[in-house]
Length: 68
Image 1 (tube, one colour):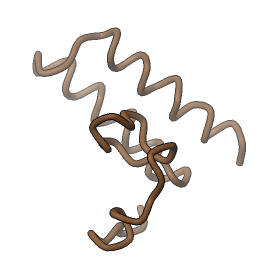
Image 2 (cartoon, rainbow, N blue to C red):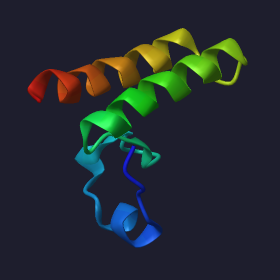
Image 3 (cartoon, helix red, strand yellow):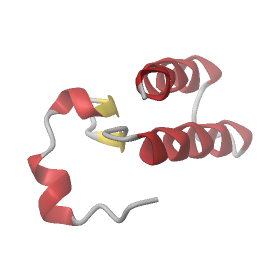
Image 4 (cartoon, rainbow, N blue to C red):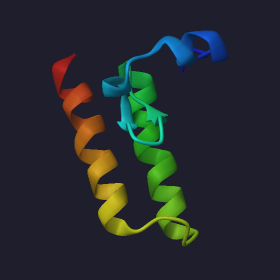
């Protein structure tokens, strides 16, 4: 996965995040989309996130993965 530096992340538009209101889970490219899905799955297993929230992240990440 390409490294996403703080300055670059700060410049990303909200639409490039799976959770735009929190600016969490950047999904600007395929590698970050795959990572967002993996982190959401881990958060569900650890009890830090609901399955519904992870489902929303997966849906947005899947759209990025489908494009390219």
